[in-house]
Amino acid sequence: MSIHYPARERLANLPTPLQPLHKITERFSRPYGGPNIWVKRDDLTESAMSGNKLRKLEFIIAEAKAQGCNTLITCGGEQSNHCRATALAAARTGLKSHLILRQNAGGATSDTPDGNLLVDYLAGAKVSLYPLKEYVNQLPQLFGEWASYYLKRGDRALCIPTGGSDGLGIWGYILGAEELLADCRDNGFEPDRLICASGSGGTQAGLTLGCQMLGAQTRVTGYAVCDSEDYFVSKIRDDIRLWAEAYSQVFPFDAEQIHVSDKYIGPGYGVAGEEIFQTISLVAQLEGILLDPVYTGKAFYGLLKDIEQGLYADCRHVVFVHTGGHFGVFPQRTGFSAAWGQQ
Ligand SMILES: *Cc1c(COP(=O)(O)O)cnc(C)c1O
Image (cartoon, rainbow, N blue to C red; front, side, top):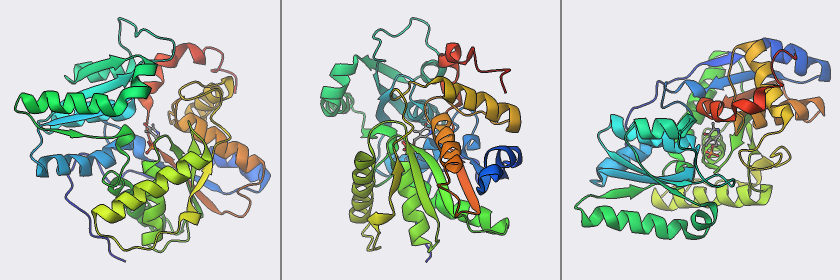
């Protein structure tokens, strides 16, 4: 079917490359009778704005402009890639941005901002940091308070949910699925599986819905980096329901096709074990590709483990969607100290 997309502000450099991971495939898939592993380079959607969130923001910013908004309010962890991309995309499109950030469980934020948070400040975002408990208990109120703060000043703000994942942001990866399936066709195959890291579920929701709308036999598996399988299945179903309502879509989505693995979260969101730091170093050394310790490192590690255990034995081509996260490497620099030079 041909898909009718809503308005889109062009920010990402598309299409991103689709590349085979020859060395990883030889070493970590062939010995187990596993598939060819490819990577869709959505870490290259842009330079500083890089990552999966930019695809969602293209539709979100077009909607903000259609609604006459001059400000974007969004939220996330202190090292949120989504907030960093939003801050830069707002600057680029002449909007203001306000970030509601959750401080790390450890408490106070360092006086010297690092990684994504540093870029947020550089991009001119207004940053409000909240202790974990206040953030978790009061997020809807915080959005409400800041939105009315702007309204009183004669501004108009669009509130963007965590990760830009809702019935609007989902368009980014419906389009992403269309692009990816075309890339694969150009390379002479239809992918058996798409793999992504899932944090707020929007990327997986868009890929799953997009593949179904386009009639592909491809199965999408999300590797959770927080929350349970049940959480993601219902979050993704909800986002797709909101999408269908908001855009009067009658497409019969099959929720049985939501596949989530929550086996590789490790100690918790944003906290990685030694195996993740080693995987990141390994992929950098073998393929020249940089994964991150919060999202893509965990998902890629999970993929390799599951290949080893034969879970992908029926697949010929698997595409890992590299969703970005480079700036998240640097604040975790101490975690890597044992990782390099070991392969
Ligand atoms: C946000 C993010 C994800 C998860 O995407 P969701 O759509 O929130 O599930 C994966 N990887 C990176 C690098 C991200 O920043």
